Amino acid sequence: MGQQEKVSTSLAGAVSEGISASLAAVDAELDRRYPGDPGTRQPVHTVYVPGNVFDADTVRSWGDQALAALDEHAPDAASFAAVLGLTDDLAEDVYSRVRAKLEREPIEDLRVDFEDGYAGQDEDRDAARAARLISEAYANSTAAPYMGIRMKCMESAVRDRGIRTTDVFLTGLLEHGGLPDGLVLTLPKVTYPEQVSAFVRLLEAFEKAHGLDAGRLGFEIQIETSQSILATDGTAAVARMIGAAEGRATGLHYGTFDYSACLGVSAAYQASDHPAADHAKAIMQVAAAGTGVRVSDGSTNVLPVGSKEHVHEAWRLHYGLTRRALSRAYYQGWDMHPGHIPTRYAAVFAFYREGYEAAAKRLSAYANHAGGDVMDEPATAKALSSYLLRGIDCGALDTAEVDALTGMTRAALDRFAAPRRGDLTASAE
Image (cartoon, rainbow, N blue to C red; front, side, top):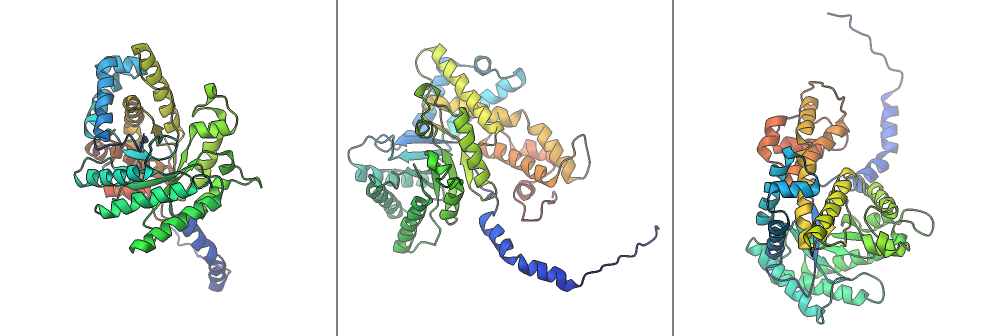
């Protein structure tokens, strides 16, 4: 045995106790403001459908239209791969998984729109109908995992209408069985944190009126104005908006076209890969980091319709934008047309399938202290497990194949992905 080292200290225990006491308020503030990712599933996209168009068969209809687009413009794996540039080893797997997804779960997140996309004449009726149809969809298992509405914003010209539509919709849900677990509300065109606070007060009033648990209703904040990124005093307004939501904010969604227009970007250059878009999303990402609020990319308005050549061109554009977003850790985006769904899932599935083996082996080596050719840290282990879990949740990966490579249960992956504060050394079961 080696020589036992003598351990000596110079400070009394009271010093450590005093420092801890002085930082107690900071510790509490860290826990409150930065609870970490909630560990729940994040949809890979949001589809929005105008409130006057939404119907009971919307989810299935979008899936059928997407499958029809594949049948017409890429009827097999080879033709689809040729359009998108998929490698031979991914082509068949991705194509078959895309078709299976379109048959099983074509939409992961659907927003019935009562803002820019709405063209109805009776918003009360359409909001009540949306509540009934969404309730029925959850009851008969035909709903998307996440569903809700985008109401009008808190600006004075449309504020009362937005408040009323929110009330009609939520009241309708309660009348038809209650608030579904997958309920999502989206507040658009937020410019000042005070507008977020006002929406919080609205939701608080609704909860109290119906005896609901405080905080039951959360919402996404749609970032569509320059003022939401940079306030008049030069600070990041979006960070203050997260605070103003008082724990109710679930997401920050980038609005490609409103934000671009706000900055004076001409229509031909309004896209999610414009430098102005990258700047806004980078600030959103930093503001949301650690808060449990997730960031979503916007959409493209180039629709895959018309000739085969145009459809293929639009598919390549959408696929490329989606892959670009994924590499920047924007794991969600908005889709505007059924023809976008095949390339959404193709991009997502290719992203996870081409990297899952390496990620699984690195995570396994880290968990088992086996070493390897990459020296990973606890934070990287968190990222690796989150990557694998996202792939499983969307259908890109199978639980069995991830288990086989990592030797971990889903519960073990969850612990790595969402460790307790100060505990980034979870072990595999």
